[in-house]
Length: 132
Ligand SMILES: [Zn+2]
Ligand SMILES: [Zn+2]
Image: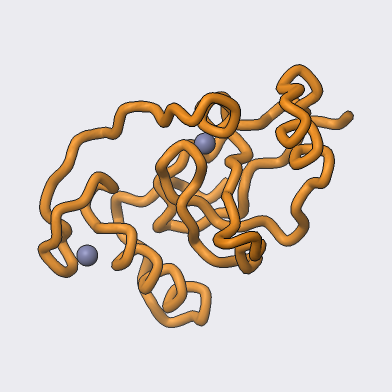
C-alpha cells in the first residue's frame, strides 16, 4: 500500500502536518471534505477529498498492522484504544475568549476562519504552519 499523503493544508490546522490524521464522522455521517474538523488525536485537520477505505477496514477489524504508512500514530492509538494523547495545555482564545486547548484560537474560531480563508479574502495568521 502506498504511503498516505497528509491532510490538506490549512493555516488554522493544529494537527501535525507530517501525518494523515483520522477524522471521525458524527453519527455515522462522514465529515465534509475540505472542512476543518477534530481529529482522533484531539487536534484539528482538514478532511481529505477521499476517505481511504483501507484505513476504515483495518481499524474496524482492529488490525493496526494493516494501516498504511504516513498515518498519525496518536490517531491510531486513539482509534484502537480510546486513549487520546495529553493536550498542549489550555488558554484563552484570542478570538472569543473561551478556554481552549488549541493554542491562540479555539476550535470554533479556527473553523470559522478556515471557512473564510477557503472562501478567499481572509489573511492567514502569522503563526500558522507553512504550506506544504
Ligand atoms: Zn492525529
Ligand atoms: Zn474562539
